[in-house]
Image 1 (cartoon, chains in turn orange, red):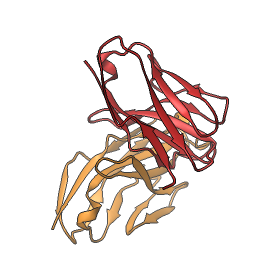
Image 2 (cartoon, rainbow over the protein chains, first blue to last red):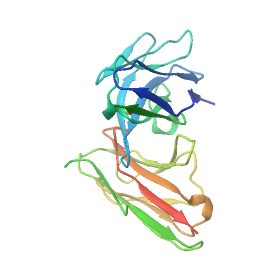
Image 3 (spheres, rainbow over the protein chains, first blue to last red):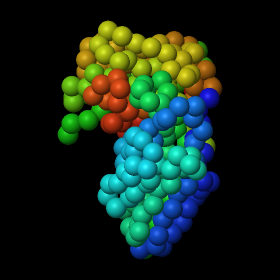
Length: 114
Length: 113
């Protein structure tokens, strides 16, 4: 079945550092890919998405490119802020986007220090 | 503020007790979902409702029942709570079935003793 593998956390960075959180996937079809963010004590929020190969999703300075050849969707940000401290989840859904096929990675805790 | 509202935020139950978790959204979304989140794991889908009057099982439905009371409300019921159901539960919504969940509630932290 489909699966998502994220880099193990926690990740601790200093403010203005470059961020990369790795995400790779296994899927039988052509999934859509997502990054969600969960701030402390809150529910998940959709951060960005990409629906086909070579698409780049971007939001709030974060970017991720759908790489079909490496089955990856790594999250990057050029200069992190303390307010970016949160848990980040990579997820995929199949072509139809049905809720039953939305698969999440285990999450990566990011802490940004001032 | 518009969004997904869950009640209660915290609950402790004894094994065998029953409980209903409430969820309401005010965005006129068609689809609603219940997930559970366990340490070191991503969210797992329990049940979802593509539209008012319909519900369907997700990945981990055993031990749960749901009701889509109307377009706004989607409740999750534990008939006989078990320690394995200790988790954080999230309700979510999407404007249509083909969309991924767009808005999540703040979660209900449930402990079963």
